Every structure is written in structure tokens, then in C-alpha cells.
Length: 460
Image 1 (cartoon, rainbow, N blue to C red):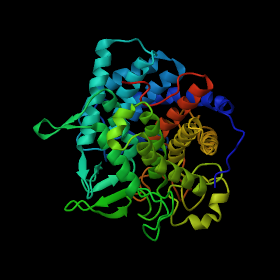
Image 2: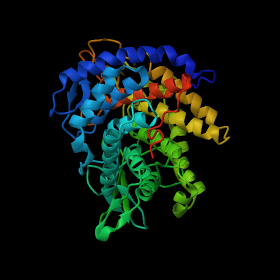
Image 3: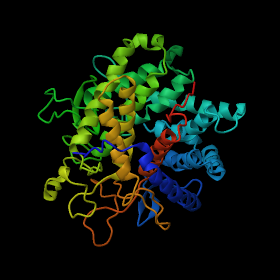
Image 4: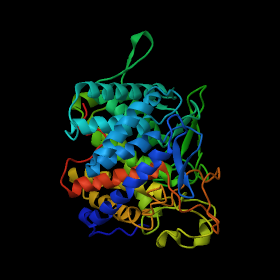
């Protein structure tokens, strides 16, 4: 269980944030210098160098989005120009990519961050440039929403790249594409000019994920533990009925792959924040504000509680809570995560993602006058304090990764195992690095009393 530090304040992390941005800058430039236009996207490091893995190009937005976040945090124009040029020159095909569920990852991290900076007044207003970003974001939300499978009883979900039968837990964090597109007044046009609400699809996907990817200890099956998550949910396309949980990157359908859980931990709270910007009349067709908020709050609370309970004391989880050799580590939940062991690797990327979700949930509840908020806020700070500092922060200029000890695909054996080790360790991932930067920016803005950082940032 995480040992929550109740006295930790955001300002206590300021030295770590400064060190992170200093380490981050040359790494972004090194990756850009090594990447060639049209080449496969950097995904994770091997012996300190970013390499590609031809599965889907789901991390390219994190590559260029990292440069934009670097500018946001430091004001260094070189990174704004880099992020803007790479977005314009290399990201267009992601807008209309009909084969993936990752539109929020790729396009909100690039076009979305640039539009957000313009809306916030951080970069000069330019109507042509703004129209370009807005059109990209309108299109990406609609394309994402078109990957739709209907389920029995009504509703449905955005299906994964595995096919129409497959719902991934990850996609909840990519719903930000639908949020921004809806906020810009866009809809998905269907047969006979049917206008399909992106907000409706967002909420239906959020409900389906909550109903089938998150467990609540309500007796659903023999492994129904509150807050546990399944990476993949499988549906029968003939009748729309749920068939079974599954896992692509976790150990099994009946254990919790921690990065999949972290996407849920981060995704629901940020949607709660976005829903606050909508009018009551927009939410009325879906049961009203109270119903919608409860829909998003229930899975957020359950998964955050599970993460706190199942994660080692310092806030860094192992890659799966049911990984088969964890028992060899003894009471692994009651001590700090052991990076160097012979049995199971930790996953720092899950921590970087989950920390932001814990913080956002804590702040949301606190603003509602809910005393539970303090627990999640302090838990988020505790995790951030660990993952944003050494030995997770990489200050080695020869290592292109920013956050060490990330895991990509343990079952497939894709992660690099260094000489002398029996398990993967010491490497980074593009999603882990990006979300560490996003977490650092989130905290920095709070410390500096600047506008609260959200993916939508006043976009409308």
C-alpha cells in the first residue's frame, strides 16, 4: 500500500521539476535529430536509444507533444518551433487514421496543445493557424467516434485496433479527442445526414468501459475485486453481448495490468473536469449533471483506491498486480518497489500516468467539498515525488529516455533486458516520458499560480 505523505506540498517538488526540465531538453533534441521524416515512430528505448516497434504509430504525438510541453514549461522558443513544425509536417495522417483508437494520444498532444496555448494567450493569436488546429481537432474526434460497436441493451464503445469485438481500457484517456471536437461544435455525420453527438458517444463509451473493464466487488465473477481492471473486454458481434475479459499486455484477464489501470485512473477524472465546462442543458439528454458525474466518478474512485492499496509504498507499481513471480518478492506491497530483482519488473510509466489522475480526482473532490479529496491529492503528490526524481529520472545525457524503468509489452518480450539482469529495467517509453512531462507541467502551474492545466484549456 502506498505510504501517503500527508505533509507533502507541490512546492516541495519544485527542485525536482527544475531538474526534470533541464534533463528533458537535450533528450527531445537528440530524439528529433535521430528521427527521419517517414520513418517508424520512436516507441521505447533499447540500451538508452529510442527505437520503433511496428505495431501502430500511437506514440508519434507524444514525440512532438513533448517539445510543446517543454516550451510551455520553460518558454524556450526552440521547442515551440520544433513542436509546431513537426506537427504541421508529420501528423496529418493521424487525423484521418481509421485503423486506431489512439486519436486523443496523437492529436490532442500536438494540435490540441498548440490550440490550447493560443487560447491561453501563450502564443500569438493567428486566425489561419487557429483554424488549422481547430479543423484537425474536429476531424480527429469524429474519426475516433466512427470506430463504433453497438452493444446489447443500447450504448456502445469505440473499438480498439484489434477489431470491432474489442474494447481497450486505454481508450478512456483518448476520449479527449471527442471532448475537444465536441467543444468546438463538431458532430459526426452518418447515413442520411444523421448528426451523431460526440458527447453522446463519449458518455456511452465511458459507461461501457466502467461497466465491463472496471470491477466493483459486486459479485460479477470469482475475481471481482473493487477497482481491479481488465485491459480488454470482448463482445459478441452477432448479438452485442459481453463475452469475457481479456488482456493483451497484462498477465491475464483476471489480473490488473497496471498501465491499463492507470489510463482509467487518469481518464475519468479529466473528463469530470471537462464535464464541468458544459451547460446543464447539454447534459440533460443524458440524465442530467448528477447522473453524468456519478457515471464518471464511480470508476475513478474504485481504480484510485485499488491503485493505492495494491502499489508498493513509494507509489511505483509492478507491471501487473498478479504477475506470476511477485510472490518471490515477499510482502511487495509493504515496501518500496524493487527495481533490481530477478522476478518481475516495475512500470514507472503507469506511475507517471496514475499520479496525474490521483491529483485531478483529489482536486475535483476538494472543490466539491468532499473530504475524500485530500487522500487522493496527497497520494498523487507522493507518487509524483517518487517518479519525477532519481532513480527514475534519467539525467544521463547519453540516454534518450527521461523516465527510467518503464515496461511496454512484457508478455511479448519486447522490453530490453540488460546484461546481468533477468528482467527488463533501465529503459524508457515515449508515453511514460510524455506523461511525466505533463505531470510536471501540471504541478509547475500550480506552484507558480498559473492557469490550471487541462487538455482542453478553455478550448470552445
